[in-house]
Length: 132
Image 1 (tube, rainbow, N blue to C red):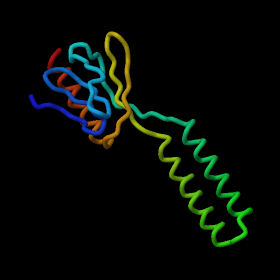
Image 2 (image 1 turned 90 degrees about the vertical axis):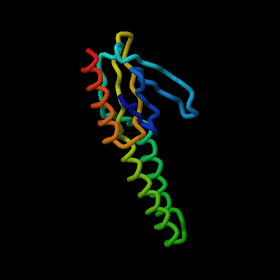
Image 3 (image 1 turned 180 degrees about the vertical axis):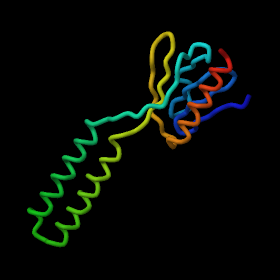
Image 4 (image 1 turned 90 degrees about the horizontal axis):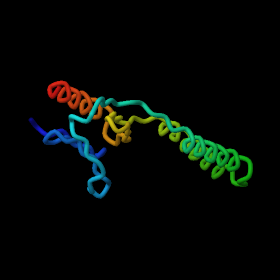
């Protein structure tokens, strides 16, 4: 069988072993296919950091409108800060690949596209079913 790989997430399946690598390609964790009870791709939400960014950029936008004496500069900064606040909303939601083993559950954030992650999970599930 061919090896499966999520290059940005640094997950790979080869020779019946699922491997997680760190950013500098050091081995972080290994999971034998026989030990994996379930694998899935879940949506995750992280509210704390994005909400802080939204509050900061919104405050800067309001301050720049009312307290910068040059109108053009104030509105330019307000629009830029408003755009950054709106962009911060996008980072609230993400996905993670969740592995359930006999020893516990672990989740890894997905850096690849969601379609690639879903395809990886489906392929691993097929191999799990073929091995059982």
